[in-house]
Length: 107
Image (cartoon, rainbow, N blue to C red; front, side, top):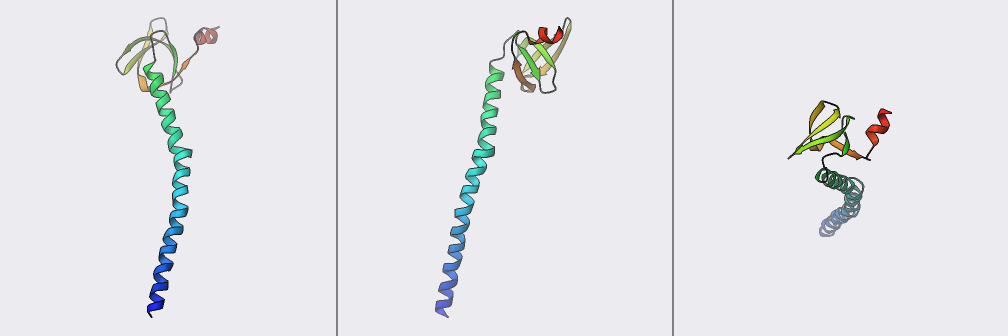
């Protein structure tokens, strides 16, 4: 009876060890495939928002393209055309566009 209990206890610790051997690489794979790229993307977006200046041509997450006419704290005023301005949060700007993009679209 004493031998049977000792064999059962060693079987459970072996199961725990094999679980850890499978679980740790799974966590590492999830980190490098999902979490780390998302953190890098968020860092790039934050840097882009910090570098915004008056006159930059940008596109919002909704697909609206305009030129920045005013920046104040967390808000941006986009000029879409002459006399048409819209206020946005900085976080809603998806990307900056190369200079002259708006003119090339209008032609």
